[in-house]
Length: 352
Image (tube, rainbow, N blue to C red; front, top):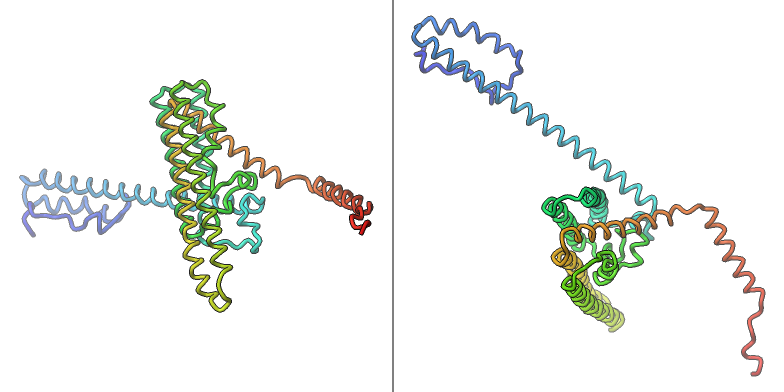
């Protein structure tokens, strides 16, 4: 038998992840007396060395079980979250909240647009949580330091939606421009796939009193510069649209493929306009954060969130109106049309 100091335990935890009642553990007490008979001087050392190795093996096995359990829990949590997202997206499309589910092409949308719709649904869930944190922080009169952490998280939350829109613009820019991802009421105020920064500032001004003279000057300057940038982008988009019309309408029929190739090249610029518009929106929010105090900024983002929440609620109420009232409106319109048809139109040509 090898010298006692060179004795090595015959297995390691990396090779055998045993449980506490594994049969190999039952053989260890029988092994120790056999080894210890070679000399009593090293018996204590051998026992200590073996026990230390056993303790290390047990600790490694315990950590391995904990990692496995945490991994399984993470997988289960991700599965549940994905299922909830799919259900929310399906329910939203059934209610008409996402036009992608009731579009004129049988509800067919591109894969990139579908992914963005799911990510946007997840973003809205996070938005409710961030708004709740803001509201609770203001009501609890948290310190400026604690409230600043919540406000900064909300800013990062908005940065995330702009990042998601940037990815979606590469795959399906028309999905963003036409507002397929938003609710019908939101689409009434859509500008290049989002809100107009100058209009948002105008809406917020009356909600942020009292403001210092310096803050008023800063906000007015921000609104003016935002409006100028909006007008420049709008003019550029109009020029792009006119250029597309001229390209498609000009030339002979035989040159149609060449015209389409040129038109496609020009249409690619649409993604750039949406990106610049989103960048303007993002910079406006960050500038508002710098101009306002931390408590004013918290109220500012809370007002923005509640405003768009009400627009989404309005869309939901509009889509779920009672069918009887819709039928009544249709009948009223039809009756009005019939009455107008009964009256003969004046003969403007009677004198000729």
